[in-house]
Amino acid sequence: MTARKPGRHALAFVLVTILIDTIGFGIIIPVIPELIMELSGEPISAAAGYGGLMLFSFAAAHFVFAPVMGNLADRFGRRPILLISLLALGIDYLIMAFAPSLFWLFLGRIFAGMFGATFATANAYVTDVSPPEKRAQNFGLTGAAWGLGFIIGPVIGGFLGEIGPRIPFFAAAGIAFINVAYGFLVLPETLKDKDRRTFEWKRANPIGALAHFRSYPVLLGLAGATILFQLAHDANPAVFTYFAIHQFDWSEREIGFALGFVGVTVIFSQTVLIRWTVEKFGEVNSAFIGLAVAAIGFAALGIATTTWMAYLALIPMALMGLAMPAIRSLMAARVPDNAQGELQGALSSLMGLTMIAAPLLMTQLFRTFTAEDAPFQLPGAPYFAAAFLMISAALVLTRYARNHS
Image 1 (cartoon, rainbow, N blue to C red):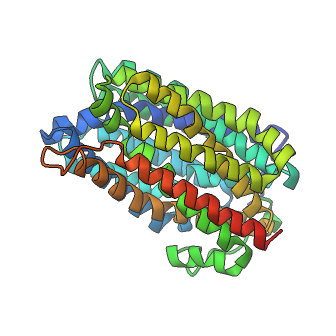
Image 2 (spheres, rainbow, N blue to C red):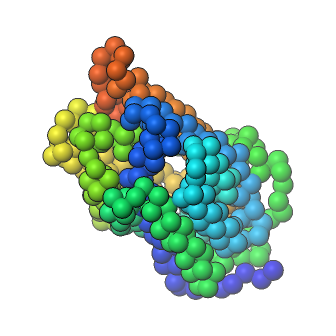
């Protein structure tokens, strides 16, 4: 197999792919609670519990299969793995669109978790085409593409959700299949033949993938900060829609607009701010700033009681977008080129672990403190936990910087 010449537009192709993929994902977010309540007949607090279990199912499957996909990307190239992942997402959306029961929603999420390697493979693409000094900036661009998708997707989903809770899933499936066609026609291969390596099961299992960090001890501190960051980060996708319905009585459209606002702030942080902070303060300090400011935002959202307070809190929360591009760049600089796919697979497994734990933790916190028999009402409990985790990640990063200055 001969790799295609990447060309100077390879990064642009990957960014468009991430954008289209995220639009599809964002479309379904505002309507998930309503669909769960429709199929289960339960109130919002119980629906949050089901939603957490659904995210858990996706994450568990993703944890097991992400290293396989990452190592396949190092063996066969980035392009085929990315296309397979996009196709799987389209099938998942169709399963959920037609789901007659909660069982089918869970089945769709498990299927998507098994084959979902879009973001990890896209990050391997970015590593392939970026010089070391541009990696943090280009990782920021992938986050910005994600943010733009989160401006467009939830807003569309909010409007479509008012027609019916299943309509956004059909729209998301169509977008995913369009993305497959786009990638098939224009997405180049960036992994050179000389950088490909044989597939080995010992590297393609979750434990083997996490052992990747042990092979590079300098990564361990960064991996610890990543775990804490992701546990906090995952609070928002796990509980935001349920929290917004319970705390502010928002409709699907209002949830969509709020998530679109988050997308705007993420784009700003990962295009404008990431360049400025990395150039002025360096990658470690940029990550620290993102973690510290995000902690303030999470705590502020936890105490918000009105719409304007929620929007005000979402601004510093979005600055956590400074953290992971800088941390990914620090990691990528310490790993050889022919192991970048494995690194991204290991990171996906690491994030998979947090995605297993965080939805259960955060949705159960929300359910416990919003149920009728709760000892006291505290809907913001997941966000207070997230603030604590962000502060912990910042402390771990500070220790890493002190030991590797």
